[in-house]
Length: 276
Image (cartoon, rainbow, N blue to C red; front, side, top):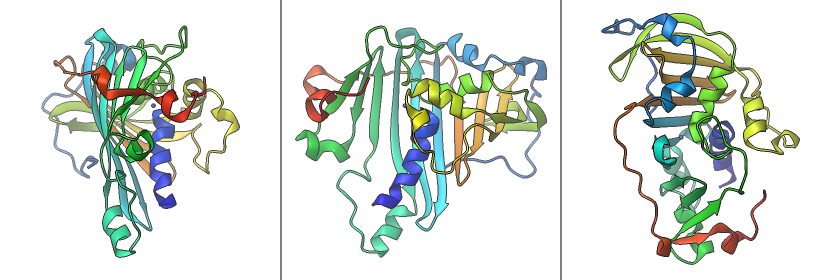
């Protein structure tokens, strides 16, 4: 099962915490062309100002296992400092492994859920049930006085919104056409992002780790921004993998439920003391 590590690490590395719809070759003209000046760029503030947003992020790898996708869907409610997500591994991988007669560890093909409530992160991973001894959530509390990102979320638990910070700090965007994303008129831009600096900030100590050949200091990106200056889609070319992030339902109500105390076990009780 070591061959599943590549797509998983690709997603985690870019998250710094996963169907991908690419624009058509000849996209329809948007209903209303966005104001390009609005893309002048404070994508982080565009989320903070409305407080809530939903996302869908897909990391796609096409290798000897066929098409493998790490798909994450979730939502943020910044007013109460909560976020939630559900991640699944999809694609050809399960059929290929079955054809090869390779067993799949129990729970690996099941969704992994996360809930962030202020400074506490809850994870429900069926793959970990044998280790935990029961189908429980694991919790980890951020260190008191630890670093907090621009959106008020503990570092490194900003999830995909950390990519907004990288975009805001990146080089100028180059206009490259008009598109629609989920029915919203957008302008498409080309860009290059320094995700390595973002990763170093979000994951202290990562600068001493090998990066497996993926160059994160100059990542080609395509960016879709609407007329209100909000990110609608981001596509990153990760040297063998593709990450596609879509943000939608800006300002719409979201419901994020924190697991009950009786269903939670601190991760330190299972794995020992967590690194700082």
